[in-house]
Length: 174
Image (cartoon, rainbow, N blue to C red; front, side, top):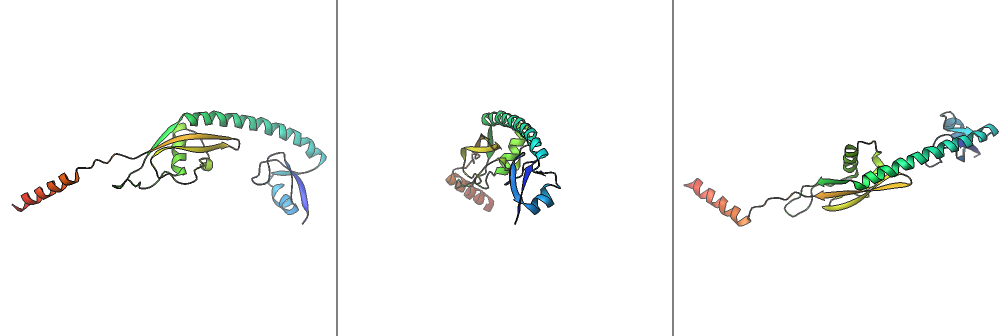
């Protein structure tokens, strides 16, 4: 149950970011991380290299945050509209899911956005205006406004429809 200290050369979910020094199980380091090029053993040479990796990571993260903030401002100005069919009682058929929102957002902005970026707790089934968070970066979340509209169903006067049906039956019998 010995642990090894390693320097990550790539970000690994639930473990650490690039240039972090972490302790992992020796077998995980020896058999997976180091052969895959995702980590280095902690040595004096590697410790000097870590400063270079940290500088590169800081520059890259600054660019990513700036790009994410610009995209968040574009998303904040956008208002997407979705149509849901409703029955006679006004209950919606179907819902608007995070996948629907993601697909429409990618189509509207022409960007490559991860599928999990649209952070919708549950599908939207109610008509009206909604605000949906879009996670663009761990530090940047944009707010997308969407409108759910239901088409106006043209309903005839129920009594008028019944009378029209009765009149058609009478003329058919004669």
